[in-house]
Length: 383
Image (cartoon, rainbow, N blue to C red; front, side, top):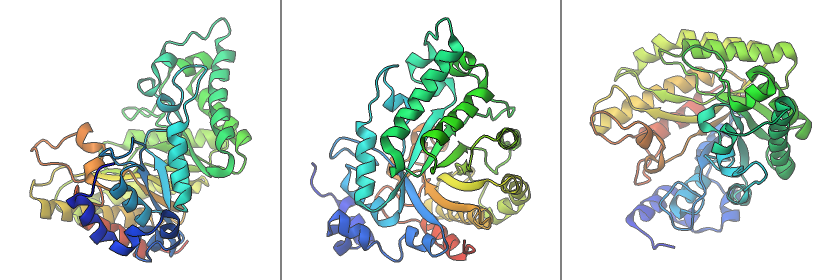
C-alpha cells in the first residue's frame, strides 16, 4: 500500500478531512447532504458511478485505490463494475467462471450502503466475446448447444447474486449504429438469429431473477449521426413489446460529445429529435436509466477554463432535457475522475490537450461539470 500523496491530501480537502477518516460503514451512514446522490434522492433519483477492481495500491479507478474509493463512497449511492461482470472477465472458458473480482466490488459497495448494478449479461458483439466463444464448436445440434451456453451463463450469474443485484443490463449494444440492424455473432448464428438470442437472454433472466429490473443498454445519443442507431433501438424495443419479452427499461449510456463552445445553441439544435426519441421509448412503457455518463470534449479549445465551462453547460442542457422525463430514476457516470477515464486511451484529443471527460479532474478536484450535475438534480421535477 503506497503512502499518502499530494493528490490524497487534495481529495481529503474536497471531501472533508473528518469524513474521509471515518470507517466505511460510518461514512455510508453519514454521506454528506450535498453529495450528488443526496441531491438526486431529494427528487426521487439516484446517482452513481462505475468503479473497477485492482490490486491494492494500484493507481486505477478501483475499490483498492483509497482516494478514488473515498470519492465514490462520498458522492454515490449506486455503483456498477466497469468490466468485472462482462463475459471476458467472468467466463474464461466454456466450463468455468471467475467471480472473485466482481465479488470484491459488490462486497465493497454493500459495506458503503450502496446499490450495485449488474453490467452486463450479454454484450452482443463478436469483438467483445471471449475468444473461446467466437471459435466455439456448437456441435451437431447448434441451436440446443447455443441456448445451453447462453442460459447457463445467465442462470449462473443471477443464481449467484440473487437479490443482491436489483438491476441488470441484460443485453448491451446489440444494434449496429451505422444502419440500425442487429449484430450477428457465433452465439446468434447457433441459436437461429439475433432476435431469438436476445429474447432468450431476457426470458432466462426474468425466470432466474423475477424481481430484477431488466435493461437493454446502448449508446445511441442525441448528437448528429445517431439517427439510424436510435431508429434501430426503437425497432428493437417495439419488437420486445410486441413479442411480450420482459424488458423493463432502456439504458441510455450518455457518452456525450460536445459540439462547440456555444452549448446553449447545441442543446437547442439537438433537443427536438432527442425528445422525439425519448417520447417514443416512454410511450411504449419503458423506464429510462442513464447508465454511463461522461463527455468527450470535442470541438473545444485546449484552454481548460472555456473547455470545462462548455462541457458543464452541455452536460447541464442534456440533463435538463432528459431528467424532465419522470421515467428516469438513475444517473450513473462512467467514472468520476479524469485520471481514470477510458476516453483518453480510446480517443485522445487531436490537439494533444488531455481529455477532461468526468466530474473531477486528475487531482481529484471538482470541476464545473460536477456543479452542472448538481444543478440539474436541483432543477429536475420530483419523481
